[in-house]
Length: 227
Figure 1 (cartoon, one colour):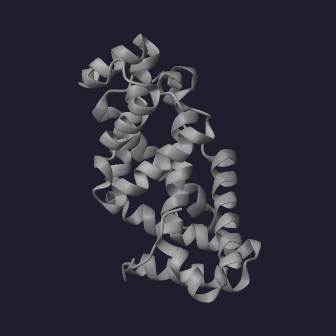
Figure 2 (cartoon, helix red, strand yellow):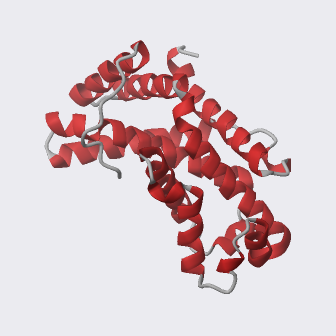
């Protein structure tokens, strides 16, 4: 996952609580500490939801593109997104260029995290050709992107902190354990209402992603009565 080297966490109360909860998780590694760490981290991310704006836009673009592909095929979708230059290109070139385009070519940390999350979500769904997005339900695609974004964001913020207190093997174990916890909780408890029936436009799609991201954070917050 992405490195957190040089990352300086905000000192607001929400982030201070998250830092303490993650420290407890590092020290204990048990079920209660992982749930509390995830809850406090989610609460801090929810409180600072504006910092995830690039992800909501990028994921929204993927959803809109998938809708265009399902309606008229890959070439029609490329035309709708003003990327006629990619028509006739290889599936790999289209895949890489569009993800880079949607995430501003990784110009900022959030752009980078968004790109990593989208790539991981598509890999998890066995999508290597964006033309195959027509076969994936939008709620399934959105949920996978949300899960990967929350996982990558946690690792970015806390990997270095964990490495300072644990050896490499223990660090990987703690990160993998958190990844699995985040994934399981959201797969089981995140309900994406009415997503299948929405006709995504570019602006509407980003708003849908934002609301769904807030719902995802609330899954963890409600565990500890934060929401």
